[in-house]
Length: 247
Ligand code: ZN
Image 1 (tube, protein in one colour):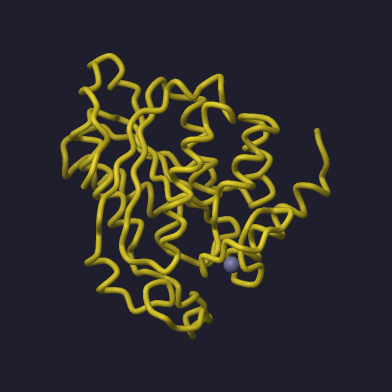
Image 2 (image 1 turned 60 degrees about the vertical axis):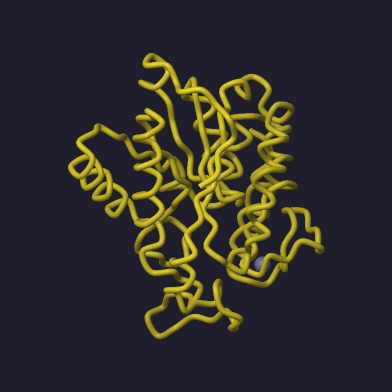
């Protein structure tokens, strides 16, 4: 794990500090904006596990760098970024994200991009990091509304993990999934509510959700291949958001 140099958080700030699981995609970027608007101190964590969309991780730095302009009212709350290497997760996963195979939907109805239990593993590492950093809140961008069927994105899973982590670490972590019941159009709308046009533009232009990690084709909803399931969700959500118009 590599950290930027930083001092330990004060006891007062730690009480309300938050750690955001930030992948560089639309959902986690929106969750990061949500956390910055709510908590006085926010740190981020990303995981590298050999996924084919590793380029998404490059977008993390660009989006974080854009936050002082995109969310100027709260960007001063942004603390250090942490990267955790999890090559074992990639080695264990025979999926389209980690192997050079075609993205398809299996008999279970789950896309073969599914990494079994990925969010459980991420949350366990994130909570261990939050423990060490003295951060009480842990936020992630999972959603069960128009997701791809990942069982570890469900509200019940996150609630159960909160109980397990608090028992196993003897802490009172609070897990937040602010997008849980939002569809993708509502997620774009939430970004606009939090940071207006500047944050909306930063999320559109500086995040990547594409399973293929395609970054050369630019659409009105951002960059991506335009045909994979993640691009499809993002594009349809943007179209509904735009059709709804400004409120
Ligand atoms: Zn795509």
